Amino acid sequence: MTAQPNADVAALGFRVHLARDEADVRAAQRLRYDVFVNELGGDGPLVDHDNRLERDRFDPFFDHLLVRDQARDGAVVGVYRLMREDRAREAGQFYSEDEYDLTPLRHSGRRLLELGRSCLHPDYRGGPAMFHLWQGLGAYVIDHGIEVMFGTASFHGTDVARLAPSLSLLHHRHLAPQNLRVRARDYQDMNLIAEADLDRKSAMLEVPALIKAYLRLGGCVGDGAFVDHGFNTTDVCLVMDTARMTERQRSMYTGGPAA
Image 1 (cartoon, rainbow, N blue to C red):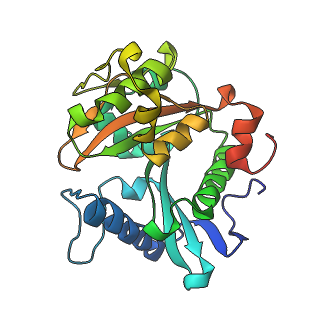
Image 2 (cartoon, rainbow, N blue to C red):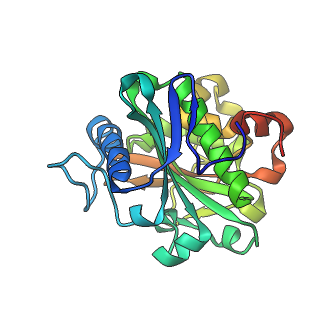
């Protein structure tokens, strides 16, 4: 895929595009409701249960990336929220600043992009829809000259003891470098099990697929987790420095050699 994030990209029955109007945003919010509220038990002050829309005050400041399945009358089967630093200034903050101190990123002088609310319809997990979502993201990154991507990603549930092996593995093996190491505000230590005592294979199996995808792209995690009882998740902050990506990693989300 070439770097044309503002144009529709159709391939293998899928179409990837940015939301153009309120109807597109509502379609994204409807899929988010199915996944984050119905499936995962989340909630929030602006969630519209009557109309089955998962939404918050930041939605107007994000670009919404949609994947549609043309074989299902263009149904939205995957979504992503994307917020550049200029839009964060309009919103007053990045979404994830409620959970993490982003000072290292803000002081980096790099062009930042916050990622969030990524989800797929259950029928499309493990298939090509995620690949097309990544390609749409890659095109957006190239178009806007983004240098550092970041955002919270979640483990389902708030039982830290159950998540301890996976959180410890992320801490020991994937901690962000000091210059990009954001820190959880309501700090939950992830260094819960000594690395020598970890069953690394078992611990990685319990890491959600989205987090593993970020790690394959060269992503790393901030210091500490954030336990979000309202959304029924335990969050980590993932950071990806595009300058540190290998050519192979870069091709995973651009669909071809690095520009």
